[in-house]
Image 1 (cartoon, rainbow, N blue to C red):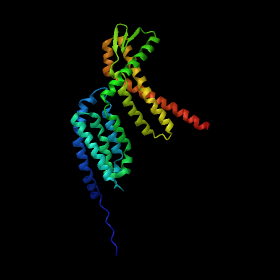
Image 2: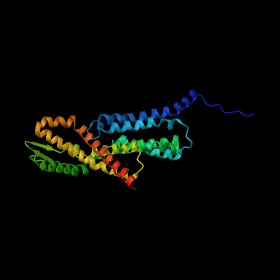
Image 3: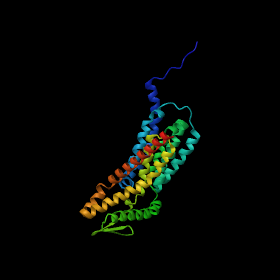
Length: 293
């Protein structure tokens, strides 16, 4: 006579899942909430790092979207490797938190989540969540030294482009370094207009777009990724041109109102439309190539 193992009831199964994940969720919340609160009241409240909450929302959404992977029993786990990576992540987080080094504090999330997934769900589970974990990279604030090194040349290039374009259309414009003089007004191309941070945020947008589209052609994916930086630069040039024209035709007060109210929206719309147009052109090229082959 043989006996079969009873199938656990849905109530018991849900209770077991809660017992496993509830302490993990509470621990993560207790660990990370101070960091996110500080970011929300400092860096994320600026134009340069305003994309941070959107990155976090996408990460949380994709974890929720694949929650079934967390609920299902794991076929195999990697506790030793996972514990090592988790320990490294916690050390990075502790160092960043204690010394206010955001690149370690926020970047430590990646090995922390990676280690926890390896411990609880193994390689297969980690593979299911590779995108939201990799997407956290775009939430890490750029180091100040890198921003300072790259912002100067970018501001110079934006200023030169704006001057040449408006001069071509017979506007009375001149440039001295990163200061544009048009009519009775002078405009300083500030760090926010250089495009460095927008290039970072638009790279995140392109990465998300490619993941959602799931293109199988790696060459097409590469061309889309390669277009992100030029599109970001062009979008910033358009933003500064609009700001300059608004100031020239309607005065400094109108120009300042544009900066605080619509500059970010214009940048995003121009970049997104350019990005979608480039993708549509690539779609036509690859479709034509496929038919002619």
